[in-house]
Image (tube, rainbow, N blue to C red):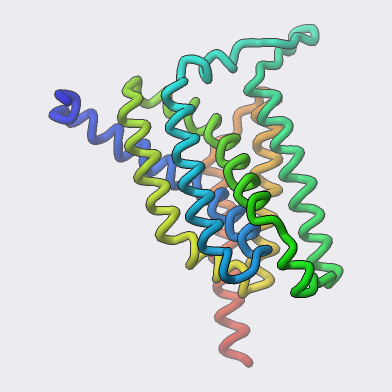
Length: 235
């Protein structure tokens, strides 16, 4: 506990917490889209349940930090190009996000609406599994980044818990907003495509500063907010 008497500890904790919250933006968007497929009475349960399981899973991953770091070691070699398990995982998830988001955008643009009966048969367990799976994958990226900031696993765990609690508090508001505004849904899906491309690029050993990615998203969101206000004013 002596580490909490040091100023550097609190700086590292604040930095880690901020990073986890920022990296969790894509999780909230994905959760809002997945939970929005469920009946109304199950959506809150899916958000809270999925995030709780995701938090427990991320803590377990942090406890196995040595094993996770080992995932960066090359397992496949093609000439001068090496692939680690981390690269393979990021590549697979990036492709998954590209395919899923593209199909969702096509579905919305073509105006193919599901009936109430079709929505009800969506599996609650499948929704939870999707939420946890995506969070686990994004955990690898955030955990490996966190290792460069501190060697104290306890600080990483505290930062994860705080970030998940923040996500729980704001998940419903974000979910309702996204699902009630079709243009925001398209923007959210486009954001997931952007994240998918970023993961694929990272898997191919090209580092993309996340600041550029999130700036692009927030700038696009700000422009859309102005458009929404303009449309509302001129209705």
